[in-house]
Amino acid sequence: MAVSTVRRRRLGEELRRLREQKKITAEAAADATGMSQPKLNRIENARTAAKIEDVHKLLDYYGCDDEEFRAGLIAITKDGSKRGWWLSYRDAMNASALDLIVLETDASTLKTYEPAFIPGLFQTAEYARIVIDRLRTAPGGTVDDLVQVRMARQSILTRPNPVEVWAVVHESALRTNAGRPDIMGPQLDKLVTLSRLPNVNIQIMLAGAAIHPGMSGALALMGFPQRRDLDVVFVEGLLNGLWVEDPADVELYRAKFQEITAEALSVDASLSFITAQRELIK
Image 1 (tube, helix red, strand yellow):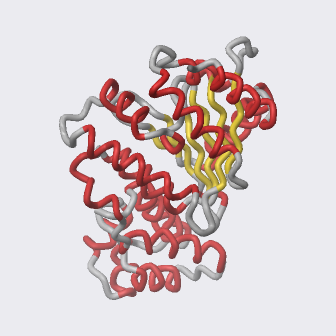
Image 2: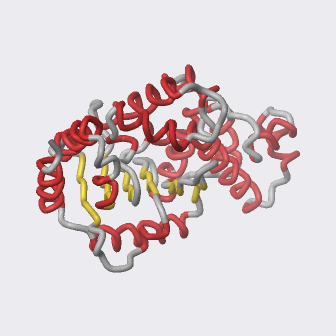
Image 3: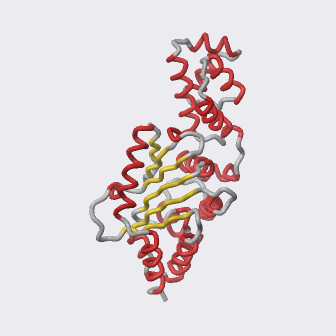
């Protein structure tokens, strides 16, 4: 399965909504577009990937003349034919992790808050190994495999047209593994290096900060170039992640992320803080 189940679900919901708005039955839509009703049902219920030609036919039949809307749905559909590097590791990851990788790859922006760890996109292999070894709960996949996946994900930061990342990291994440200078020294060096990339902004949330929405836990808001209402939020959990897809809910997270950034140190002050913390490690 190459396509993100999150995006597939969104496509099915949009197609079903259009059909119901026009008061067209699934049987009539299937007949008019030359597909079986069970196939249309599977597409609408996100149980199968749709073909681009089928989506075009459905949109034509439903009278969709919003070119931006159409382009967004076709972009989602194209995900179904992708065969990314992550497929080699799909047996080592749960569905949420696979969704995260697919969506990260397609995203143009990423806003994230991390209260306990260095974000995965910023981790060194050595730091990632410790985190993965201590936190993983799924039996499939080796630690080495999962570390390789995490390192491969980071290519989105330096590819042509890289993702624009705005990350807020809690101060405690910089102090974790303080007794392991061999781990935290290179990790903080990497943060300093990444913070100088034009597409990466890092802010530090001080331990003494006022109460803010980030105290609810880690989150990642991914934005896509096709349409703002295709943006999604990933809320991380121990066993699995929660995907927030409803546009109104995503907008709420967007506003709350702004509150988080307002409470954190500025980007320049954060770089100074990271550098000072690095100098304490011998």
